[in-house]
Length: 267
Image 1 (cartoon, rainbow, N blue to C red):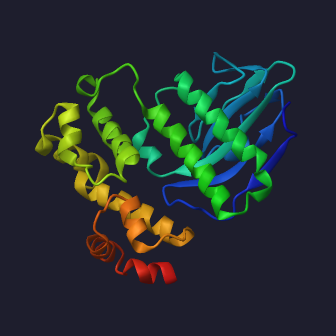
Image 2 (tube, rainbow, N blue to C red; image 1 turned 90 degrees about the vertical axis):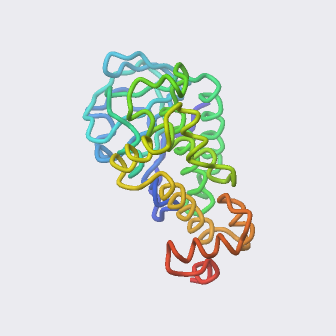
């Protein structure tokens, strides 16, 4: 049973890196261009029912795909077609993902199932869309989807075909392990089979920030999000973003933001 058509617009962003703009369900059988309103954003699409053809690709119920910004496209679908979508902006994504094809279809069956389950949870509680918790769940779903799209299931880290894949691999590793105190640039370089100086030089030129600074930045941005919306104390926030020592975390936070975590939380 497919839910009725609806669309909601998010008024506030939970994340500085991913900004969810709109989500909903649509049942149109044709659209030219696809989700025209959101051509300036990424669009994460879940096929809920039926089949469609898009850029020569055949997509069916259960498929999940990603449309890139500025990708005008049209589709045709069979009777009973329905899809859910999340339109979002992603500053990190513009450097993480290279647009090699108009539509990026997710292939991992296990992750497809998990994404569908998470989506159903969002759809069942859509009446609470204007809460911070709902926004957080929506952003988490997009994060999970992006991590799946950027993952190369058929390539080992040491056999990546392009140097830009090293950057993507590092960013994915940080996203998955930023809460671990054991996250180190050296360990990721060992997984990639390249030297730390070589990777640091290439990453810095590509991203305009060193790998170590990127980890700190990622953790501090996460900490600010948690302090803004959560009810955790400083020690708990520190542990959540990979710091065993709350005092060291507080000093790092002050250097990054100019304020202590407690002051940021009060504000």
